[in-house]
Image 1 (cartoon, rainbow, N blue to C red):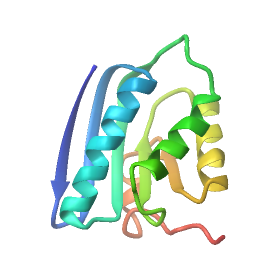
Image 2 (tube, rainbow, N blue to C red; image 1 turned 90 degrees about the vertical axis):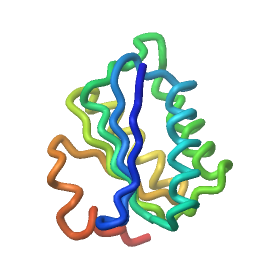
Image 3 (spheres, rainbow, N blue to C red; image 1 turned 90 degrees about the horizontal axis):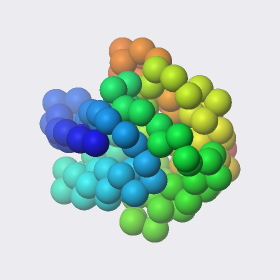
Length: 127
């Protein structure tokens, strides 16, 4: 697994690209790094490209609740808008969107990297 992270001042967004096997431990490492960049730069948008990553086949979808709680536990503002770019695992992705929404987080998945940038990432969902 590898990931790169950049903070784009012009777009006011933290951008992450992930490759290789992606499991819960690695997801938390990435989220902690992103949280630090959000605080340092005072940004409220994140794009994480996981198109070059592979799910750990031993993980279940129940980990979505753990990740949603972890995002809150590490102090990320719930108004931060998260956009994930993906290529497969749609049922897992949609499940995490629903879990995140129930936990008050704004997380969306897109198959096209351009889509989240339309409308300044994407509009926040009404509560």
